[in-house]
Length: 468
Length: 106
Image (cartoon, rainbow over all chains, first blue to last red; front, side, top):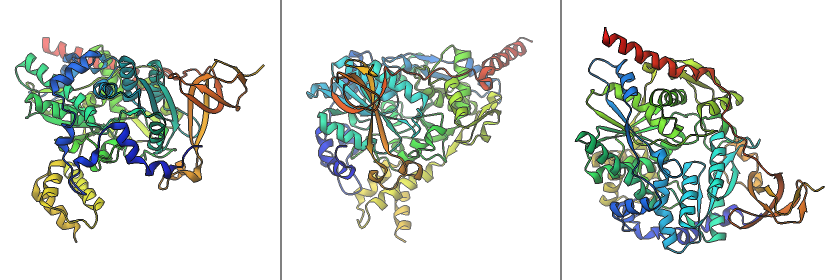
C-alpha cells in the first residue's frame, strides 16, 4: 500500500518544513554545530507568556508535596545526620494526567494559531494522550501513532491503556507493530493530512517544560526560603531533563544538582520484536536514555531541542523491581497511587536522599496518573506471562528481560551511577564521526563543549585521539 | 448474517510494509515479520465479513480502508492478578516506621 519507504523518507525535509513551520537550515552553522539558543528563542515567548498559555487549558501550577513518611523511612536506615527531605511535584494533576500536557500545550496553541486543522504525534506514552487532550481543548483533530504490538499482536499493557486514553480524547489512533518505521508512517500521514507535527523535540515542546522547573524552584523557595539541592528527573528522550533544567536556571536556581534517572533495560534491543514485550517499562528507561544522550539528533526533526547532556550533573539507573517497590511505598505510606514514570525518579530519590544531610532538599519533579495496564500488578502479571522470573531479594541481581527482583528492604534501594565522562566523550566522538572529512573550527569546538557540558580541553583531547 | 453492518464500530488491519520492503539494519526478529497496523472507526460499507476489504470513518472523520479485523473492539487490558511479591511491601514499611517511632519514644 501507498508510497514506498525510501520514496517517503527522501521527502522528509520538505514534509517536515510544512508540518513544523520551522526552517531548521536557518540555524545550522556548520556540519557539526547549530545555534541552539537562537532556535529555542525562535518562537519568541517569554516564560510568563508560556505559563499563561498553559493555564488557559488548565495545565501547570501543580502541588508540591513533602513526602514526610518516605523521608522518615529513609532516615530509619540512613547514617546518623543523613536523610534529605523528599518533595514530589504532583504532575498527575494536569488534564491528561502527566507533565506531558506542558510539553504539548504550547505546540498545540501554536498549531491552532498557525491555522492547522489537526495535529499528528508519534508516541506510545503519555505524550500522545496529552496531544489528544490539548487538541480537544483547542478544537483541533488529532492523529496519534503508537508502537503497540509484537508480531503475535500481543500489546504492552501500558501502551494499550494509552490507546484507550487517546481514543477517549477523540484521537484517531494507529496501533502499529514494532519498528522504527513509525517515523515513515508519520511522514506519510503528515503529507496526506497537512496537519501539524507535534514533535516532542521542537522548541515549543521544551519551552512548555521550562515552566515545570521554574514552578518547582519557586515553590521550594516560597516554602523553605531557598532553592532545592537536588532535582531528580526521569530521563528518556531528554526533553524532561532539558526543559526542567532550563526552567530552574530561569528561576535563578543555578546551584541545584540535576540528576537524570532511568530504569535499567540494558541488553534489550529497542527495535527488536522479540525483546519488545520482555520489558515492564515503556519509557523512562536506558534504552532511550543512553542513545539520546550520546546522539540527540536521532529524532523526527533535523535538530533536537531536547539536549539532556547540556544540563545533567549526574545520570543514574534503577532496576524495574525497585520502581515497583517504590510505587507500592508511595501508595501505602503517602496515600498517592501514581504511575511508573515519576516513580522511576522517586526510586532514585529514596537512594540518593540517604547520602544527603537532613536539611537538604530533593525534588522528584513528576508524577503521572495510573490505571489498568500501568499498575505493578498489571505489569508483573504480563512479565510472568512473557517468561520473566519475578522474585524478592537483592535488586542488584535483576537481569532486564529475564528477571525482576523486588527489594526486601528499603536499604536495598541503590542507584548505579552511569559514567558521565564516558557519555560526554561518546557524544563528541559521534558528532565528529557524523561529519567525516570536515575540519572542525573553533566555533565547532565551542559548540561541542557546550552541547556536552565539557571543557574545551576535553573536546580537544577527543579530536586528537580520533585523528589517530 | 454479516459480521458487521454500516455504522458499527470496527477495527481494520493493514499490512503497511512486507518484510522485503522494510528498511535495512533491523534486528532479525523484526526484519522477518511484516510491519502491521490496526485502526478503529465506523464501517462505511453496507455490511461486511471478517477479512473483507472495507472502508471506515475514523473518530476524526477521515476515511481509511483495510481488512475487517474485529467488530466492537473492546479494551481488554486490566489490573492483572494480585502479585504476592509486592503485596506485603507497604505493610513491611509501615511496620518499620512504627518500630522507629516506638524506639524514639523509649
